[in-house]
Amino acid sequence: MPNGSIASALGCGTAVPMGGGPPEDPRKPAVSLRRFPASVDTQGVRRLHPLPLGALLLACLLPGAAGATSFAVHQLVVDTGSSPTGEVQSATQAVDIMTGDYNPGDYVFSDDITTTALLIDYAGGQSGLFTVDNPWPNGDGTGATEQFAVRVQAQLLIPAGTWTIAFGGDDGGALSLFGIGSFLTEFNTDGDAGLDQSIFYDSPRAYDTTAGSFQLLAPTTVFLDAYFFENDGADAFEIMIAPGQNFTVDSTNFSLLGDGVLGWAVTAPEPSSGVLFGAGVALLAWRRRRR
Image 1 (tube, one colour):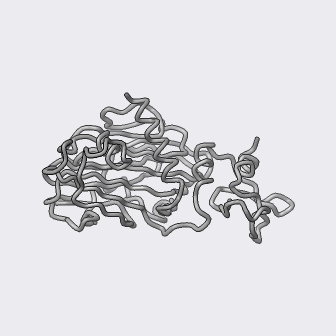
Image 2 (cartoon, one colour):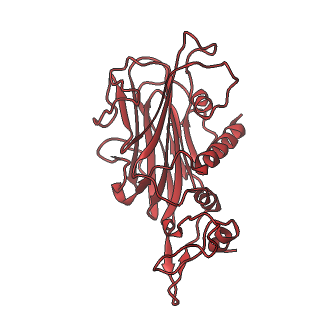
């Protein structure tokens, strides 16, 4: 069954003439198929290019109106004096914190902040590869805040080609691209499950980078879900991209990921969107495979 038929069967919309118009059934979610790479046939009807089914399923959960051209960012700071679990010591723990996968009473949070960002370049007390050095969502840019986790989410439209994405962190983290199929190669991982849709660095570290390369045969809608943790000391977190397969991760070969950079489109998912739940379920399933 072609992806267009799958979308219709799932109630995610229908192919529409170039002039636009509502779905055939107004009770269906108004998810625009214009978000997906498409061509126009001889009858003036848009036809979807083939997409990974996983990306299509995530896109079916997106609301009809596109979000802002930015990332959705959530920070939770652990109050270690009141939390029985204590310190944040791994990316696995950060994922648990940010997805609520812990027992009631395990954590008490001193800060719980949700915001948006045009670029992901946070720093507290040091720079990473780049010098944008935005303060963390809680406003701290000095490195005084310790024991916290951050989650970054976005919908991406990525041009066809071979690409490398990397995150830099002090400490570690994880980054998933749901919809690429699988990374072809990975660089500088720790506790990673192998070649899949995620790159992972589980342990604390001084600032360093973790990267993965992948290939898309057509422009593809992908969901980014990234995590970072800070144990103590200075901290930084960046997300960057480069064309081709490139593991020389520096500010010359790579660019901070943002809307329009190297032809990528970045859209923040709406907080109420079911895509957040869908990606969280997919990530938790991936983590269970690691155990």
